[in-house]
Length: 311
View (cartoon, rainbow, N blue to C red):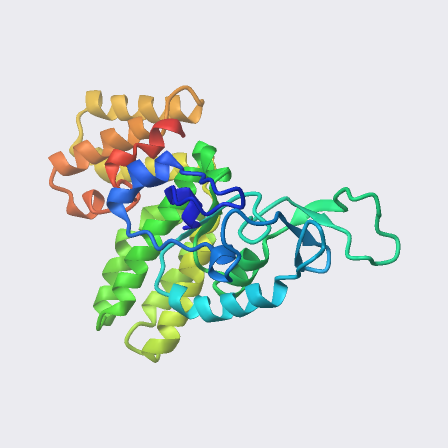
């Protein structure tokens, strides 16, 4: 995470941008690795304001210093240390760390404006761009976008899914371990993308016959691709109904009706996703249906983050 989001006074003006969701709610469940690229290339704080230019360079506002090479060298040094991460939260609006919509200033190319105003707002921070290009499967987000409850939930879901996958493949896994992992993630994958779930199923079916490294590479690729797709309400409803279909024969009419009503209320946008999820998990556990109770879709991340209360 960008160090300033943890409360470190490393911003250009000597301040910080502490984010209380990250430092208070999420912190007990993760190990943060603080990174401030501008401090790490020796700029200190406070420091001159930096600007991102259309040529991809990062230059002080007064034009006196160009830090592009230093930032690039730092990224090349740091990226190998980041390969074991499960997620990265970057500081928004930073010319080194911002992910989206950064103002870009003229680089002196023909036709560019010369009045000192941004040419456009399509930039990405120099360090962030290098990291995301080198680690395309790493769940990455910036703090400003995490104020949106849908984007926040999706990012945290991806982080914990990435961690489970890393744990699987960092051990001396067997084909049966991959089959069990895939089975636990069935409903969660279906909620993200049914077509990719089917591709993953074909990969798992080849466990034991294909080389392990090839199998792992293919499974990682499509698993991460699926989780990068944000589930829409309709796919959540399909997953909920599928779980109810398996659970249904163990329920009486009254309990079945309660769950159906909760799913329909969610479909109409009149109740959060947490309500039907809680009912399904409660009945799956109550009926000792381990296959359902162990589905990661019902418990994708620590419950005390209460992220699905806002979906």
